[in-house]
Length: 279
Image (spheres, rainbow, N blue to C red):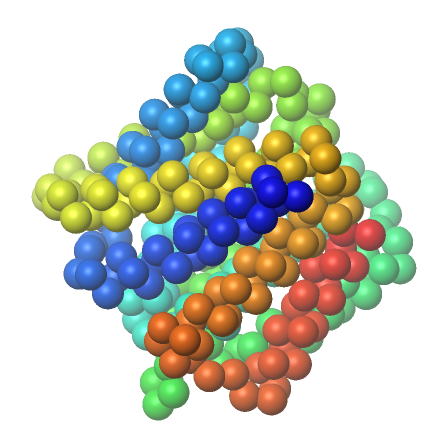
């Protein structure tokens, strides 16, 4: 259980870092470089320490695709927050992208979901509609905001679908190759964007991004360890719902983000959908 709690705290650290980074004046492009650098080197160190750096072309290709999705999902979410979106509400919506792997399973592997999974998909749609007003009070939601939220949602879900594909192809033993290529791709894209935009990451951006990267990879590492003691049917919804709940509490205390009755209902529906999806 201690690993599961550590995973939730890492997930919270990742989420809150978005806001802290922007509040400290960091530019997303520079912060992304810090995220990629820390994540890549930690993934490499873990792989070497475990003695499991065995190249596999399929895992490497999936990691590359996952890195592309992850970079632009994070980049889009940064700009969504930069445009005035509320962290708690918008993050809850993005978290519901976990339904995309379920939809992908139906289309790609012809897996028929049970009644609880169909109900979960229904609750997901209702929750997203209910939580639709994700901007700060007094701010209007523009087309660019919807574009950034959609990109973060779809690409996050696509990344989860790619990770599911790794499992479906029985390549879990090559997960370290997957992670190395995932974060190497993120880092490569970040460096290319820095060069194209003529932006030299500041020390603050690299440190903030580095801390964020450590939280992100800690999330992966601790959930893998937690699954040795806790079944996935408990671990995954507990981690996700715990992260959402703590994020909402922190944003309420730190940035006074209030939830109206309809928004509370939307969050409850979201967490019910997450639990049902795991059953």
